[in-house]
Length: 151
Image (cartoon, rainbow, N blue to C red; front, side):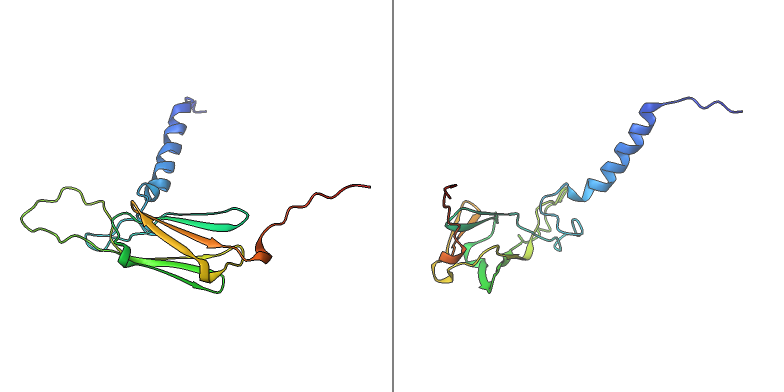
């Protein structure tokens, strides 16, 4: 019979390696679905928060480095689509590049809205690299709070 020495830290080391391998694609917030691509072909995916209160839905999208004129907002039915392009800088052949981590390219994000909105009153503002969209809810979609008296 062979005696095997118990090494608890050895097992933890293996778990840590497997976890690191699993999460390595999540390190870059804009790396896209398949990670960073070769120079000039990287993808850009803006991060978005969607919130609501009783009167409005709010969409906040981080689009740093994107010009206001390069962003388009469309709404069809209950689907809001934000699309645009983050343009890349030209590669300078006289420079040596050691790291290229910034991502560029076209993007499109679509969201199914949780309630009906008044499309004529949608407002959008772009400031400091953040796109803020306010979508007013229809009267039918607003939550009416009423206290019921128990008899």
